[in-house]
Image 1 (tube, rainbow, N blue to C red):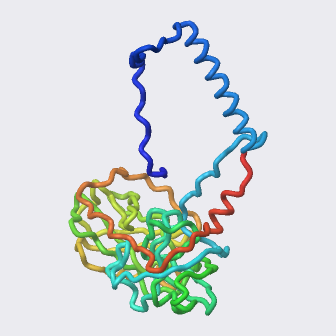
Image 2: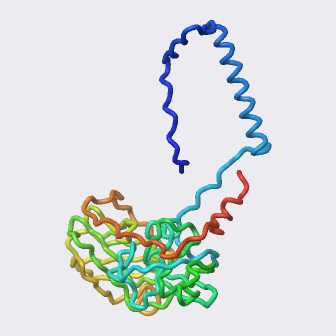
Image 3: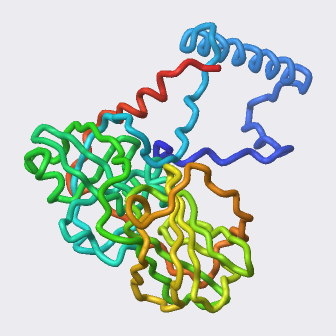
Length: 324
């Protein structure tokens, strides 16, 4: 951040001073050097005193940056909520559309975590009660702890006239599933470039793998929530193995190369019809280069209500830690 003022242009090394005006004499070079040295020493003393007065004896340090990660586990978080309208779109998580109940949320970059939160659920509690929302969007300007709810979800927990309210929220572990896993092969995909969107998995996903030539190949998650193998996975049909953040795993077969179509499998992420484990595999990584043919990320949300000026409590907690 800057204060908007233009910096002073640098003085080129070795540049000559402008000649003295008529009737003025320049000091000898030796005297000028002594004066310059004395001036620098005085300036250094002033700076040292200023730093000592402002910072005390302890050295100044900055709070470490918060690591981006999706909300997981049963712990509660404290923050604030605003609201916006996706106008029916599926948000940065690339869903074909918003959920039919229109209860969804956009998270700031640290909790959206480059798409790692997509498809998970949060229980959010405000002055009026609690609402369960699907994570389907990113709010680039939202700080940690700032939830940008759908207008419908906000109305469940507070009076919309308030615009912004304090909330607590927690991740939902193993929410009820609407059905088996779904898969959507991205437009433009082929046997030489593989990209798939996984749906109805309940918990945030940890990994997606594709069976090829007798071994599992790991796909790379993009921030718009598609899982890519840039060099392709063959013509299909595909066997795809999905693992979530809590170790549940399910394997779907018969997924066709049918770009743009939502294909419903016969297996669930957990519960009846799922094969689960708490020991995730360690697949070989596929190249992580982003393909040039991938579609750009959909536009992220913007809060419709004004944001108060106080910092997020999560930011305050990070800033208050002692320096190492």
